[in-house]
Image 1 (tube, helix red, strand yellow):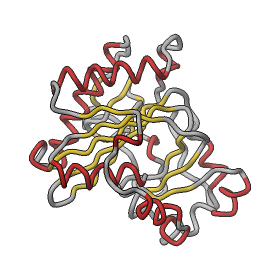
Image 2 (cartoon, helix red, strand yellow):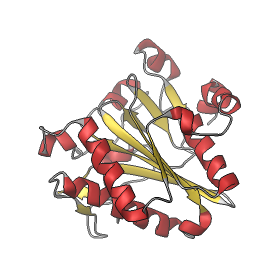
Image 3 (cartoon, helix red, strand yellow):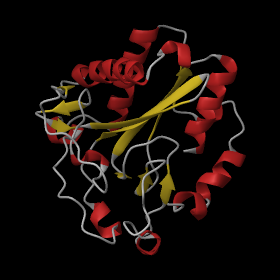
Image 4 (spheres, one colour):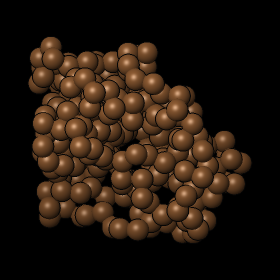
Length: 239
């Protein structure tokens, strides 16, 4: 999360668009910036199950990061002047990448079952415009907009680990719909092949004026001060 915010600051300072693709070392849970966790999720349960918890800079709801590929895009605000425009532009690229792998993904329509507010997890149901396979959400995304730049990041599920949220919760969560996953429709496609497809789709859409990286050292902005905040339980469990 600190690296993603560092990308946002770098995009604001340099005018570069940066795309980072990464995976998680172990199962973790993230909460939306303003999501209420107090009385819903348990720090003690996270610690007992060795599931680190972090609060995102972006909004949205809780999700488990495990078997997935995570993308992060930081760009000058002028690249996509509106929240919706940013989502649509990035979803176009994600859609191209998934279809290149033979995944019959499409955008959720407003008539599809919409996500419920409150305690509902991120992958409970799609919002209009999100990417789905047969009506089931396969990518969960969130965006934060600053004055000069914006950050959007999201999870592309390889397999479904979202039921782990129930073990971390203090209260019953809304029943979770089974999300779509890459391996449920294309079990022969590896995480590295997905990363290659995403890289190709980004470069096809943006040309050479973009940094695509899986190397954290290429995010040229001080990270440690940001990391201190994201490691702080007072930030993660502040509400």
